[in-house]
Amino acid sequence: MRIELVWAPSSIRFQPIPPLGISTLAAALRSVGHFVEQKDLELECVELTLTGKWTTWKSDLAAMTNRDRVNRFVLENASDVEIQRGLSATQSLLPCDEFDIIGFSVMSMRQFWTSLLLARSLKKNERPKIVFGGEFVTRNGETILRKYEFVDFCLSGHSFKSFPWLIDFLQSNEKDSPQIPGLVYRSHGNPVSNKQGPIQIDDMPIPDFDGFSLQKYPKIIDIVFDGSFDTLLLRYLLSTGCPFDCVFCGRHVRAHPRLKDPPKIVKELCSLSRKYQTKLFCLECNEVNPSRKWLSHLCDEFEEKRLNLQWYAYAVPRDLDKESLNRLYFAGCRVLRFGMESGSQRILNLMNKPVDVSEAEAILKHSSEIGFWNHVNFIVGFPSEEKTDIQETVEFIKRNRKFIDSIKMSPFYVDSESSIFDSPERYGLRITQKTIDRIEFSEKNREWPQIMREVVWGVREIYQIMKDSEISSAGSATELVFVALTHFNNKETTKRWLKEKHPYFLDNIPSQRMIAKLYNPDERKLKETDELWHDFVGRWGGSFDVI
Ligand code: B12
Ligand code: SF4
Image (tube, rainbow, N blue to C red; front, top):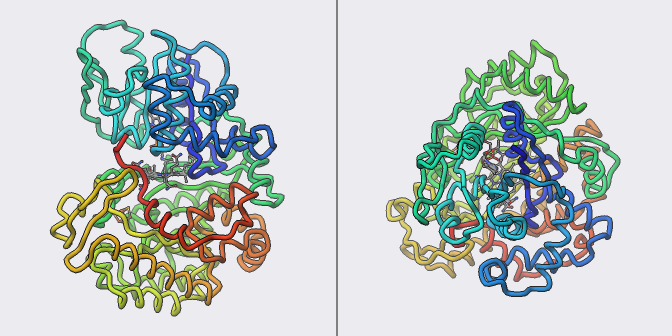
């Protein structure tokens, strides 16, 4: 079968790194003999905008990611000049071959709308079959099939096994209901979902990035990062799930942990490094230290194979002594992204976050002394958080200013798959409204508007201490920091370079907005307004299932 896999533009968060989901599927499908094309349309669109070949991209993409306009366009055939223009620009980037199946990888709501537009436009009667997959689809498969008849199937969860099975099913012309795990299909016109199968992570194929415009990534990195790095960065998955159970965290994230076998990891990284001629990787996981034993085994493998790679990963600031940190550094890790969340032990306990404030401080100190770039994530506005708790976070930053290189702050939001959402009353919350991009709530003594005001206050307090301590939020764009750090091979030079080229990371603006600046150079000089705070405090929550 001839299959096209597409990563459509989201206009929300671009990264010049080839998408991992579809390259994993491409590997699985190619290994059983299918012809697969894969396209990072987002990269291609960014190139068009940066080279001035798509001058109307801002308004066109705004239209293409607007729910009401897209729905009118695809469901009611309404005319829309901007959508039509954007669609012509994006569709012209796709190969014009005839495909039997086109698969869209959808991570969030914004990417959903652009995928939908392309799917509707590419679908001609029976062929090609349109298949949607990815994180957003995993949560919304039935709704998608109910509403959009030009989407033939959705697949939930990791699909490196189920997608090839779906293709076998389509080739077999069977008429029975397909017994494929995670498949959402129509039966008598109604959507039906099969249960997802277990993830057998060691069966996950090594990603196959062939077919992406790999030569364009270093070029785009140099343009948007404003440097001469000339480097390709690849992503690789170490594990899924998490052994911990923080109450704000979505089930899909903290599901039963599956850790790849360290020898497999190191062998595959070695092969990717050789094949694609790069030493730089983003190692994807919820934490690189889910258990002491696994981390130690991973370090053993790196030490034995001496690959000389450099990489970055998430970590939980617990159970990392000096020796483990030294071994991680030796293994090539250069940036650690710590999920710290708060400097208040009371709030950490309420979050069920397995972190002890004083242990975390010792870890930050050791890792900074070893040479890591410490990036720390905080959440502001967790239910029942008082000004005194924020003050403790501020004090935490003050005490550790020498050991923290960058900070990202996220206003708290209720994830619809979290324990908090399941039983809000247990955490003193009452859900009051679900809007397209957030779940609003009230607490015993606070209503939503006051909660919003206090979050804004907390965010400002933390930005102030960051400013006073010269801690930027550049690590929110970890790929930027990492590429610069590995290039200069020195933290202080990297900081000076960041300050010169990307000074807005030291300004008091929300990280989402900074990322927009990073990837839209003409926006770098725009002045932020107070309104934007509210705008982004309200919008950070991600995408809920209101299609
Ligand atoms: C890397 C990443 C990104 C990168 C992606 C860049 C790139 N070029 O790859 C960046 C930083 C840009 C990003 C941005 C965002 N992300 Co993100 N991201 C991730 C992360 C950490 C890893 C994804 C990954 O590579 N996984 C490994 C691969 C192998 O798995 P996969 O992509 O899921 O693919 C498998 C399946 O989904 C499925 N599949 C995927 N595509 C397709 C297509 C078809 C046709 C089929 C059949 C199946 C299928 O099969 C694949 C292989 O088994 C996940 C968290 C996580 N642990 O998964 C969050 C995550 C997916 N992101 C999330 C969010 C919210 C966002 C943003 C909205 C954040 C923001 N506010 O800006 C944006 C949205 C951007 C967009 N494109 O829409 C959420 C999604 C929640 C949801 N939608 O329900 C997650 C789960 C994080 C979280 N904890 O909440 N993200
Ligand atoms: S927040 Fe991090 S440590 Fe906590 S459950 Fe989620 S992934 Fe695990």
